[in-house]
Length: 445
Image (tube, rainbow, N blue to C red; front, side, top):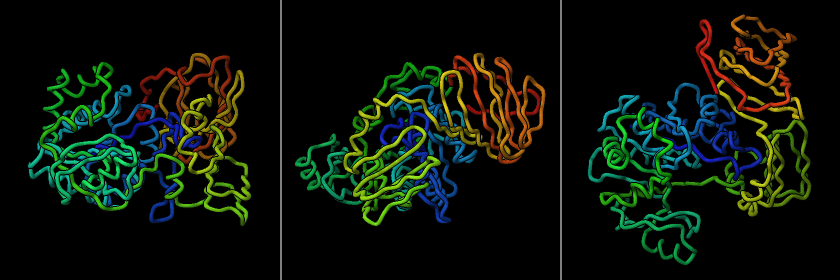
């Protein structure tokens, strides 16, 4: 079957590790079976493939996240990029049209839509596979997955089924309740709404044409900015009469806050940190090249990156968003399809950046109007193209790129470069892209 993973959101709730470019699903705090750190998106993709190696995975995401996805998953996943943010109904609609018109999927194919960021076991994706089988039986237009609640939560919406059986018709939906209402819902065999839907591809394509005037994927893409911002729940799910829910009874965690992330991250300490013997129930993530010493810390989360430092009581960490919105700093770390980009120093008139490129990767061919760049090769080997001229790069080489010059870097091995940007105006928007000259075809953001 085909699975659409929804990867959106900004970086507020796991600040300072997450930001507007690096959302929570790209932070590597988990470990795979070999002990290697992995992110949410890597964990989810791995689990899907372990359950069904033949499953097709398409990630619906914003343009700002595409590079991080390619960096972490490579070319083994397809990406449907939204031109702008329009909520979940337009995103799912665009991805469905992409599957049908660009990837040639049949209208009879079963498609499941899942969020990219739950912390679950493989049984969750086995249940997603079960949704596909149920869709193929054709007994309902929409099939949902509902999570068996473990307590009367006020944080989630609820699905009220007609019965308490493993598969049931849906009676009604309820918004996030207060605690008393939640208890009442649990007495009615209610399930948490996890935002997992499955349907026959043709169902949604037909539904889409009823609601939006478009001819195919490319036409829809061109009109995307004009679409109404609305969730898939409101636009489709709550209006559908032929709808059923499958009860999932396994472990499920929404790791949307540091408090929840601390429960499931692989290690209590990641990075340079030391806790004394009086610390209790405390987790530390340090991405800086300086140590953190924790003494007497209890029930705390401490996170440090180039974007800032968080020191918080775990319970209070769930209320950080309005305070983070008052922190006005530029992004200091970003993942690109070719590697990573880390700001080391920024001041008026200059910025110093470390570029870490993966072997075999290359940047886009581009120019800047308002800044000069000076590259110093720290390690590895590669090539630079400056205004069509190729130059081999070795350790110690220095290359100066004047404003207006077209340029790109290719990494023959893993390549580390210190880049100093000089100019009165230094901005991520100061970039013009060009078709690569010669045999260089790979491009990135």
